[in-house]
Amino acid sequence: MVDTGVLRERYYHGLLPREDIRANHFVIREGESHKVYVDQKGFDTIVELVRYYAMSKEPICTKDKRIRVILNKPIERQKWELQHEDVELTKKLGEGAFGEVWKGKLLRVTGPDGSPAPVAVKTAKLESLTKEQIKEIMREARLMRNLDHINVVKFYGVAAGTEPLYVIMELADGGALDSALAKLNFPMKKKYTLIYQAALGLAYIHGKNLMHRDVAARNCLYGGGQVKISDFGLSREGVQYTMDLKKKVPIRWLPPETIRSGLYTPKTDVFRLESWHGR
Image 1 (cartoon, rainbow, N blue to C red):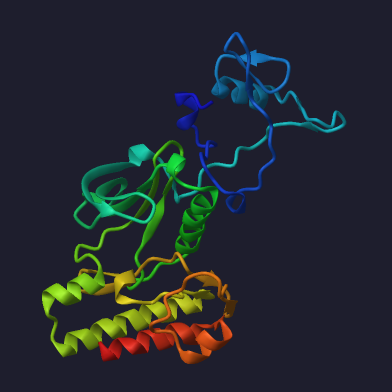
Image 2 (image 1 turned 135 degrees about the vertical axis):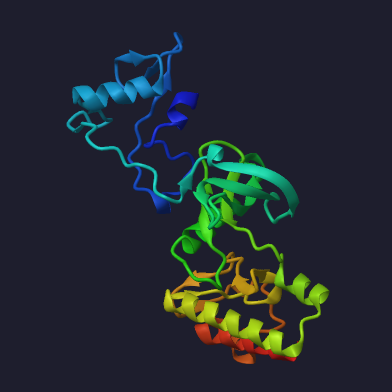
C-alpha cells in the first residue's frame, strides 16, 4: 500500500535491506473506509498520518503498551537514494544478470558542459527476483557507493521507491574492456597502459579494505581512454575470505594456493591482474 504522495516525501526510502537501515516497524493498516491507521485515528493518506503525529507529538502506541513513540525527526533519503524521475532512459543496451541494461541521463547531476550526466542503468523487476538476488544487488550497491576513483566505475545510486529497481552507474562509452580489446586492436604499449590503469584501480579498492575477487577484462569497462573496474558481485570486505567450495567460481586465473586452500586475499586479485600480461 503506497500512495503516490508518499513517494515524494524525503522520509520515504522504498526497498532497502536491513543492512542499510535500522528498522522499527509500525504496521500501517487500511480500513474498510479506505482510511489508513497506525493507532485509533484514521487518515486519508499516509502523508497526512505522518504529518499529524509529527506535528502534534501525540505518542504512537506499540505492542508493548508501556512504550509510546513520538515522531521527532525524519531519517531522510541519502544522496545515493535516487528517484525514478531523476533518471531518463534513452536506449536499451542489453540484458544483465537480473534484468535489462539501459543507457540514460541522470537529470540531477550535470557533466562539464552542463548537460545531464550520461549513465548506465541496470533495471530489475522484483517479482522476477528471489530474496537472495535482491540482497545481492543491494549488497553490491552498498560496496560501490563508497568508491571514488577514475579507474573504478562510478556508482551514482539506487532508485528503489517503485518498480522496476534501478541501479545507476557511470556510462563508459567504450563498453566492456574485453570487447574493446577485440575490436580496437590496441598496440602493445597501450595494452600495458590499460593494465597499469587497472592496477591503480585495484590498489585503490584494496586501500578501501575490499577484495574484488573477479578481476578480469570482461568485468572492466573502457571509457574516455581509461579502464574502469566494475562488477562487484563477488567482492568482499576485509583482507581474507574463505570461498564456499560448493559454489561455482571462476578458477581459470586463480593462483594454485587459492584453489587448494579456498582462501582468498588481496594477493589473489593481484595474481589475476598479472595474468593479463599473457593475453
